[in-house]
Amino acid sequence: MPRFRRPRSPARLVRQVAAALLACLALVLAVRPPGPGSPAPLPMVQVTVAVADLPAGTTLGAGDLTTAALPGDVVPDGSTSEPGALTGQVLAAPVRSGEPVTDVRLVGPGLWSQVPAGEVAAPVRLADLAVATLLRAGDRVDVLAATASPGGPLTAPDPGGATVVVVAAGALVLAAPPAATEPGGAGTGTAGDGLLVLAVHPDTAARLAAAAATSTLTVTLGRP
Image (cartoon, rainbow, N blue to C red; front, side, top):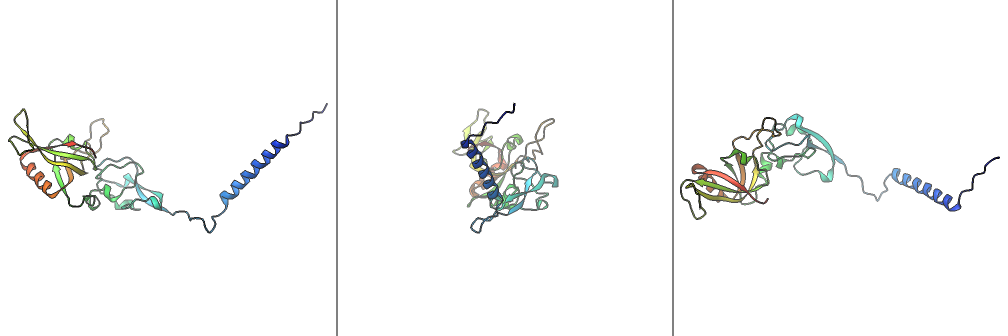
């Protein structure tokens, strides 16, 4: 005996037709060109970015850089579309994979432009290289000078007979050496000679230079 299908519910049929019409409308809107009042899409700009995470102190090579297309309104100032323009330059701060490499990330004029008004860039060589490699650009540090003879009112007697003087407080780190490579470890680069570059007041720079000639320098890390 033939079996007859039950007629569909009118309400269900209406819902199916409405869903089909909405799907067609969405497709038409998606492929329709923008009208005269619609904003034009932003042009894409080629920007040089890091291929992988790179530590501070890295000398950039051709294999460290590539280009990526970014919307024009998010391209940072100081960027470039030519990786070759950055080859051979040294990173003053670490960069992440895919991050645009700008002038303020490099040792050079772009970095010095970050020195606050009224301050100067002062090199400071620490006695403990490991301490220097813990620091990164943007950190704030106090520089301490340890001497074998009493100093001024900021000195604090040490049980061993030495005194400690605070010669710079809250100094901004502009550049720091990279972490030293350890056998089997993840460090990259060399620790160098523990040289930091700090942004300080000119008077503080003079005190740092004088302390470096007679004292052992170290730092304590403060809030950025």
